[in-house]
Length: 234
Image (cartoon, rainbow, N blue to C red):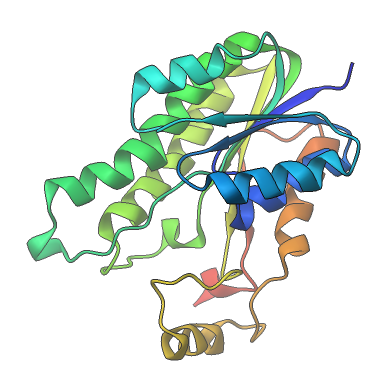
């Protein structure tokens, strides 16, 4: 039986890329999605074309009970990738409670609960990977709740790594600019890419190769691998 991996937010974007990477590495997948059912089914078909088994699970990860129900769908787990996230825009002087909770509930509380419950299903050699952001080390004033949540997730990564060792390793991957989102206008995207020392966005495989590295190197825990083209240097 193939080892099993759970990827949250796996319908599209980086979550999908991480799921495909795990399938290529011989894992069967539990593919979590929230509302993007059509995209999730497309990702499922792509993974099944690699001769890997896929189970689709819909859940709102801001609801702790739905997280418990998600974890209850399987008996054992080898890898957990916490990729689901939201990035609401807001300013400090007018930030709403809803904005704050939207980021903290999904970007921080959900990975904690998934790790807490998922670890109970893991055997020796389990791996948890939290997807953070190069912005965790920045002061992005237009995305305060997101930035705080990702910085806290890196701290949580270290705490979990110490608490769950030696049975389970816990690490994080902090991507830089890789996939332009709808919330960033093209001119702003070009300006940001112009500030990156390597002067280009990352290729998806340059981000997913960090996951491959963490799968293969079993002597790394509690670390955040930054893949940002040097953006953290500025």
